[in-house]
View 1: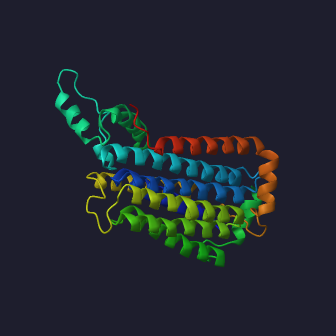
View 2: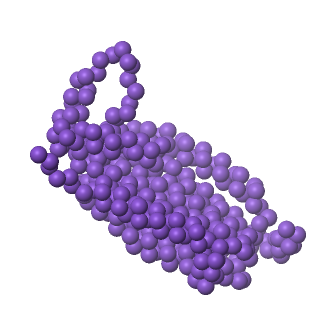
View 3: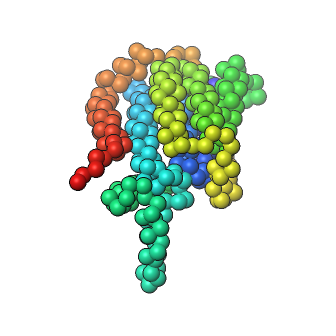
Length: 141
Length: 183
């Protein structure tokens, strides 16, 4: 089999996943797109392992490790999504703007107050909400 | 490397073998499932199209003679990750039916970035591996081969990975547990 078949397909799958990560608003759909990108990488790893006849089978072992890490990632990611949803009542990425940089001169106290009224569990959830919003930024990055 | 070159002389680019035709067809199904998974406006349908894409990738692993990876893919991705995603959609009260705001406003920028990435990667990859052929006569990924290499050469990463999974499990439980009200 020509090596270009799996390599090109993996490149296309990766691009589709990249589009999904950039274009989707819902966090769970972004996680779906991340899974597509991981699968593209796995396809490359397996194809090159079979092509090179690697004695250590590094490609296939690394594929197994990637699958396990992806499972861990999806578990943690969904737990964070649930926490954000519970505190905010929404799981849209563009509404999580706690870490946005504002001008130090301008007074944005009113914006913080509106965020507090959105939080479901009252005042105690405020630090938890901002702590949960911080890893969200890494998911989108 | 000279063996590869002589191998490429035997095989024509325009006369695909049966495995290549099967790979092409399954690859098209996989790509179609992936595109529908990232463009569908119905959230649950997106997760279900992901099953098509991941199952197609499992069949591609089988065509590449990596059968153990293929079954792991079916068990973990199709079996558990998609179920987790469906639970995530359900618990965040995703709307049943089409939701017009599934895509954000920068979808055209995202489309441009994705097309540029695809064009660049495909050009480079095709140019780099024009004369590379995978020899599929000896299966490279049976359970015996993968298990032997995994437990002979990759034991330490394997054990570290089990620790990572345990940490992720505990972390997920701690994160999603409802906190008791302290008075």
